[in-house]
Length: 66
Image 1 (cartoon, rainbow, N blue to C red):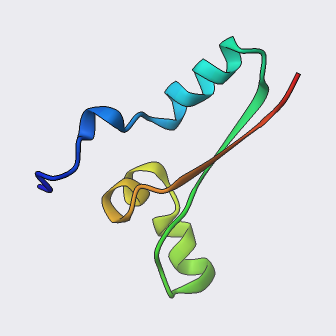
Image 2 (tube, rainbow, N blue to C red; image 1 turned 90 degrees about the horizontal axis):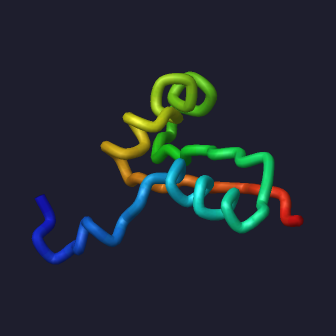
């Protein structure tokens, strides 16, 4: 849909968590962001991997360092 983006460079948060896990990081927590103005109700429906991917695709990966 956007020919200027090199999609092969964009990896899933699960892959990033696995790579960091292989480097010794633990306890991965993935949180998806959503673009909405509906407050809690909007977050309940839009803050999940599929909806976040279709909206903006932003995620936050937090892990503990060794």
